Length: 335
Ligand code: EPU
Image 1: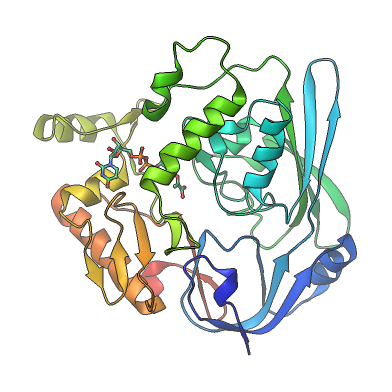
Image 2 (image 1 turned 135 degrees about the horizontal axis):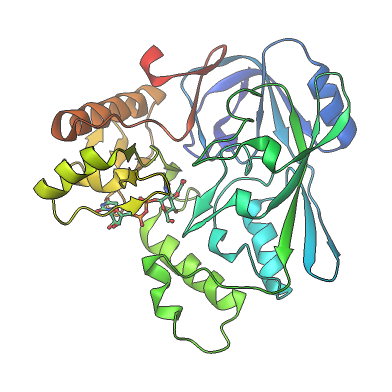
């Protein structure tokens, strides 16, 4: 058995039967042909491995960025194993704007479309042109943005295409007439700044993230553990009467997104521990591994959080991260 400790940002010492490093298109094609249980891991920053995996794990390691342009846009293609933050940094250092609000998000470019990563008012799908994949028959095909059916922290790669495709690279389309996105509170201070550059927004995003989110290299974690729940206007209005200070984001469809971090915080759970798993003090949406947490500590803490929020607010929290058992992806309820 091979340890996956350095391939999941919770730093859990879970093992798998076989570990393969995928560095070339051929490696990806061979991996796609494997018919036994298998999972592909990028940065390992959005997963919880709950027990030893009875299958093969592929680690994406093909790295590289290519920039093309036409009169109005840059078309940027990044190989799946490229770190997302490295892509954003490369763009910003070349003066190419558009991706800076997504600075410092852990993980790889190949994983970005799966859960449609997002932060500070921007989501991956707003940048995506197309995704290059290998299908089950071994063909290299290109999938358009529209086909992916992107939503809040979801896409067809996470749902109906699960296990169908292996993403080999992603192509972004970044406009040459850059407009900063500053609608999110930590970026308000930049609103009146003259001649603002993508680099200045990038620096501010990094500052805001470092203030609130733990560095996985120091304290094991997988970012937001839960999704922000989206509720009906009727439900929200009731809640608002009781909690006039509740933060919210109004959605296009008359629904309201409520920060799960705030709900957990209101339950008084910041700093709460089960074993070595802890609700992070600066951002209650993040569960951290204090050092020796077992998968069960994290599972039990997640369940405790879900039931506390349910009792206090009548809201069901859903994990944002993907959870794996010995034979593949599972739900928290199965544990
Ligand atoms: N809040 C609290 N207590 C907390 C945490 C948050 O009161 O413990 C309040 C904050 O004061 C704020 C609101 O809740 O009013 C929202 O908090 P924050 O700005 O930290 O953002 P979030 O909604 O909790 C989302 C994403 C993050 C992303 C940030 C910034 C999800 C699940 N999470 O968090 O994404 O970085 O917005 O845009 O949508 C991730 O996906 O792993 C991730 C970190």
